[in-house]
Figure 1 (cartoon, rainbow, N blue to C red):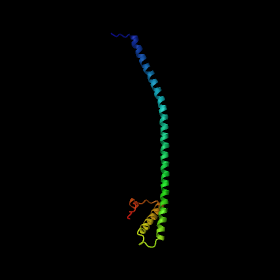
Figure 2 (figure 1 turned 45 degrees about the horizontal axis):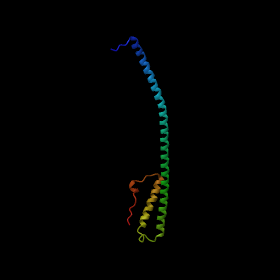
Figure 3 (figure 1 turned 90 degrees about the vertical axis):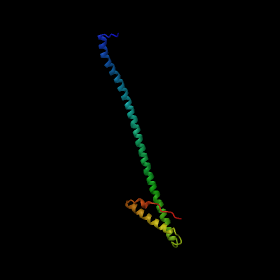
Figure 4 (figure 1 turned 60 degrees about the vertical axis):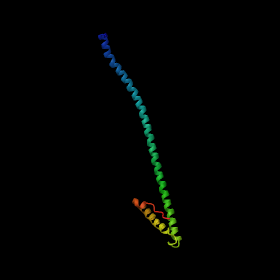
Length: 133
């Protein structure tokens, strides 16, 4: 059988907790080193995500501005065409689409006035006119 002396038993009782403490310390130091490196990596990734979000926001703001400019130019062109059609055409009977130009011209003027005043038009008013040919 296995026999352990009192001295060996006391040695194990004193040495095992000491050995456990040393192993725990080594593991804690190793993990804290990794934690600092991980924290730096997390910060770098968060900074990258923040910069990406700012880039996306800037892109869509510029896109919205460009679309607004394009819409205003289209309205201006359409108003010019409608005014030309009204002033250059002889009679509405000769040009059945002339009434549609007049109606759409009035709608564009109303929409421009509402945009200028900050009002929002209902979705029903935003539907494209039917194109009966």
